[in-house]
Image (tube, rainbow, N blue to C red; front, top):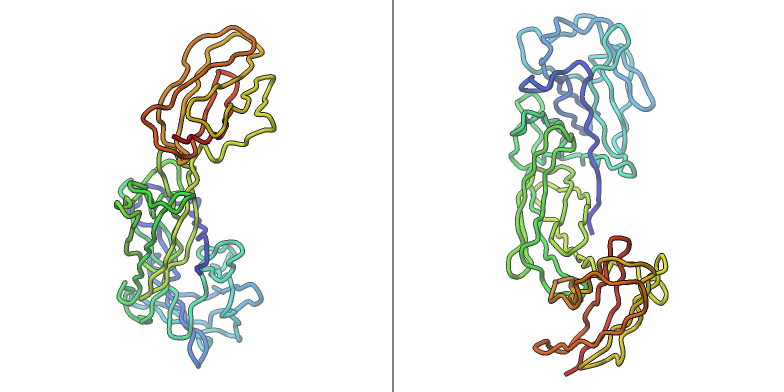
Length: 345
């Protein structure tokens, strides 16, 4: 069992996409027996934090006078750095840092899994912030878990990697080869980036990932696209076995297969070795009737022509096919109807 989560990405309005990296303050959060520790990154070259303050969901904490980076790149903040006690909920919270004017200029959030945030860190873990420039120039801002906290030192990915793997099958539990499993996609439509793997002949896929929330897509022609979110954990493997539904199986078959006056009747006999298809057209137009496997794979065109309105009966043969369930699919420029049939030699 795994948790499906989404990390919400937020971009400063004042930032330009030409910047190689977004600027940030929050770098790492760690809880231990003494309380919380926050690591700040000197990306803004702030001289000191006089008048600055934190807010969380439930509290506000003000910096003591004279707190500054000095010549350092990193600064460790604890409750001793503040004028008052400041509560950070270890299970779920959203933390902002405010400059003296009151504006929130950076944030860190976790634990609100209902709204798809990253899970909270355990006491032996830290929650790290990472900003990485994608190939298109967009900066990806995300949080990840690390099993070996680096408070006071530059963040790294040691003990912060996990594995995602699984098998993709159809509704009959037959492995599907060639499914494109996209495990990174930039959600900003201006800058599309993606990284993916293809399933092998056994329907298997695997990839390594930083321990963050991952958005996954499963893509295969003839099947419905699937989108899920999952939390990757450090030094662990997440198993995601995914069933894909063929497009033909997902067609909503209306009673008697009628829609807007069109009708695709049940073929007879059914089961069959030679059968008759009957259908009704309420108006003239181009008609295509094709045969698909139950997995949505195209097999053959049975009818492809312009026809006048009226009732039709067409006998078709299925020589060369193996026994099984098939889909008869009727399309015009107005509608799309489907009917299951059983072929027996």
